Amino acid sequence: MNTGTLRQILLITDGCSNEGGDPSAIAALANEQQIAVNVIGVLEESAMNEQAQTEIENIALAGGGIQQIVYKKQLAQTVQMVTTQAMTQTLQGVVNQELSQILGKEQEWDELPPEKRGEVMEVVDEIGETVNLEVAILVDTSASMRTKLPTVQDALIDLSISMSSRGGSNRFMVLAFPGKKKDVDVLREWTSGMEQLSGIFQKITTGGVTPTGPALKATLQQFGKLRKRSLISRGKEEPYLEERGS
Amino acid sequence: MEKKNHTLKNEAPDLPNGTRLLGKWYRKPYHIRGILGRGATGVVYLAEAREGEVALKVGNNSMSITSEVNVLKHFAKVQGHILGPSFIDADDVYINGRKYPFYVMEYLQGETLFNHIDRHGKEWGPVLIVQLLGDLDRLHRAGWVFGDLKPDNLIVVGGPPYRVRWLDVGGTTVLGRSVKEYTEFFDRGYWGLGDRKAEPTYDLFAAAMILLNMTYKKRFEKGRDGKETLIAHIEGSRVLSPYQQWLKKALFGQFADAEKMRQALMHIISKEAKPLSKDPSSQAQQKSANHQKKKRKKQKGGGRRQGFSSVDVVLVISFLLLASALYWVGQVI
Image 1 (cartoon, rainbow over the protein chains, first blue to last red):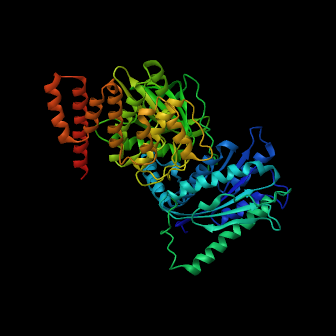
Image 2 (cartoon, helix red, strand yellow; image 1 turned 135 degrees about the vertical axis):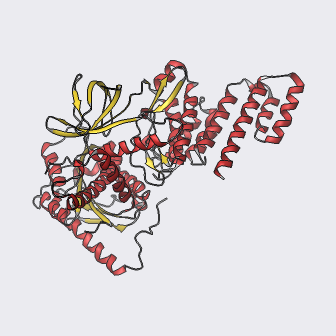
Image 3 (cartoon, chains in turn blue, green; image 1 turned 90 degrees about the vertical axis):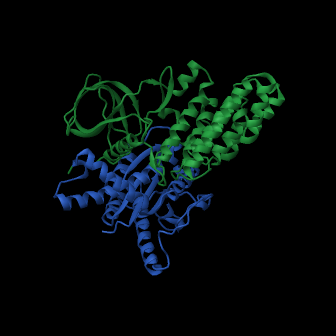
């Protein structure tokens, strides 16, 4: 298993999918490919739709990721926390696998005495700081999300500040759904910094349908493209030598 | 396999008064006596242990609780001063069939920064920050950065003498890594004035924001341009006028370390405390206090003129400051 790079999809949405089938099936598929699917549900100050909440929980469960429902105002910090915590959780999963190989089945990190846990945690922290990270951010831009998009943009810039403070390299990509003609539109191709994010959501047209499943599927394919590309350019492009965002 | 909880939400259990907890690993009993606070990673209770009153934090996420325990244990190794609450115990407990991690630390009894200032006077604000900067300097020298520095994570204990202490050390990060726990108002990244790399200047920014928070009470938002908003608030309060340059230096990352920022603040406070402004000559003297040689001369001169005045006291203080600054510089080199 490759622990050199952690891959995540971060889905930012406010509601229910209504086209293209069950999104958690695609999330399960992503999980099989060691790509965690994290979901952030953004809502207005009013109450949350229960159906939407269930869907968000199910996608994250199937995708081996983390989910969090927030009000618009707290979005920036939440995006950062979810990404970081999901990273730690994935590393934890890797550590658990290693542990059960050494200590036998059912031996999980939680089952260690507190001192040993502390030692393992230091290693996890260390790896989390230096591991390479690939995050595809998939933003729901359906009509009801329109007013939240400026906040989403701020949150992404904020995420970029946190990630560029890490030791490891980062790659981001930003996608929006529904797309103009396809299920998703790529707003930013894989990039190491998110400095030029201003105005990212300006040109999009907000559609009526919410094809969350197909959009997740299209996002998943982007990781394959990245892997191919980096295979070709391997040797010249050293992933640890990223330029830092200022 | 146990089903994991995949939310970030704080789902630590509510424990009513009188609940008895027994650690799974070390079998130490605790009696819950009340709630002290709720944080992002768990609930802190006042509890009774064999050693007396303790603070006990029950969390939901074993990872974050373990990280906090690691930090507390590292704090114990920072010699000389006790920076955070001292660590007592870490264990798991079963509540209604579910396992929760918890840890136990020293119970710090005191009052919040804001309460202290309300009760004892505004002049305490900068003095408490001087104390805080001293602790930060020791922490930084030990290779750590506090991270989530804000009034909520501080407590003023004792009295008299009063001393600011760190209540929650959960955000503490190894120097050079990235800060993961922060609060927007105190985070230079939020204001567009830097990244979240754990370095001394990250904490110094937050320390300066504490003074702004104490002055304005409200945590204002960044608006269109973070830097401009901050400058407007620094210049917009008469109370802050002696601190303007000091604040700007701290917010723009121009203090090399906590000790330099501490010295500069003490200098402002000692200047403030005296009604010097009426006498222009003494002000000039003070400015020259930056220069050791000149200072000695003037001290002598001052003594000839009129014996011991309060000006001399200020000069002696600033000389001591300068000497300790030079000593530290010498240590570093």
